[in-house]
Length: 611
Figure 1 (cartoon, one colour):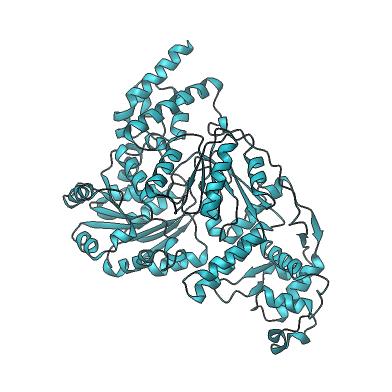
Figure 2: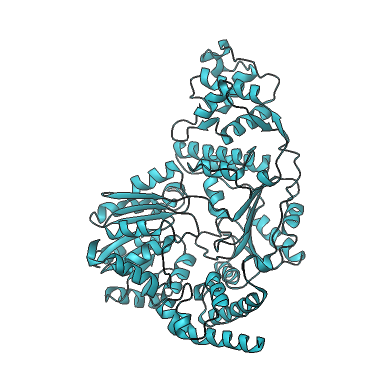
């Protein structure tokens, strides 16, 4: 390892600063690679502890680490959490006044700070780049690195500008982290951000604690109300496509007795911040929001995410449902989708100020999400297959728990696959459907595909029916979309088996009229405290109240003081001394010093009352 740091010092930091006795799966190899001076791309699911993978090297290395983060809220929470853990961290951003930012920079320049958090807009100014060049820089971290590829130059040009860092600091390792990236995005991030000795770490994408469900949209208010029935007391996010619908959803939820707040880009910035702080700090709040809300919202106990409208891609969907259940306890994700959603998403893509190539990719990503919505089998298998991960049926999605009616479709599937093969595996669904239905379009005639044996063999189905069949063939991995190329359909190895009669294909024919899933709901009152006895649960509730009080005094989110898992461990162990308190999960030296006394007193008082 570089910089004189050894494995022992890494583990000392893990325990003494962060209070963990061991790394989570997948963390240590990333830490080791950074300590070896490698540039790193780490794709790790939400809740797996990505931040620790660069925070520990930052403390072990003799110098300064720059962390580039897209949102002020994320920087603010992470810096607050680090400071409570005794770490010298600062952020310079637009939410602070000039004097506060100048004071932070003085501490950085004086060598008092190990981690400096900056937005891409702040970092990529000529003045800041010149200033940090004089620092003893050891590492640059790009958080939410998928934004480099997916947001595009029209939305956040400074994210695109981050590609200059590898040339400006050629000898400095750069670590890029994200929870969401398909193969195309991963390659894009590597090409734009990383150079030299690069190591990639792709952890599993599965979040098995999240129950997945999709419903055909009928009446979004009625479906939302049915979904939320019995969920009083749980925090959640309801995503809406428009600002107007966000306000409408918040008002509707408040009318039903659930405390809800809106969040969208059209609101006053101060009001947005206040609503966000309430959501993060207080229990049982439902945030009705556009996609402007969520990235970097490190709230572990979100029990559900509900989409009243379809997101723009599987990556966006995965990122948004990933805000649920970060504490590992049971959570739910439900999405409504309909034909209007598909149309609006196409309009949004075409309205972007972006290149034809980017628009083409975004259309294909949307195709993949529609395929997920119409999946005839386990949703988790379909979702993970998109990211290149194979799994068995999960038993925790609507398709596993309440299977849809499927029709025999082997012959129809073979017709579609044959048309794809005979046309050269380079055409999209629209052309294949024209061939199947016998449509003599200019494109079909010019390619002489009207002379193929498959021309007209599917005339009995409508275009919409064939679109659904082809999407489900993609979802079931008989066909694949060439996102990197020109969006053509290709027959997979599994598809060739279907053509040979070695496999069967069944598809959903009731996608429009299917009634909502009746998946079991878990009561929110105890969902965040699994395996606690009644006595332990009572103490856990007391400790949560104390945590909230201490967090409000410090003006930080409650989880920054201690995580739910730490409080659960505390309730089980019931420590009586500072020595015993130090053994609690997530208690490092700084938190032992600052928080042991009030928590030990609360535990002692509760035990005395019980006696």
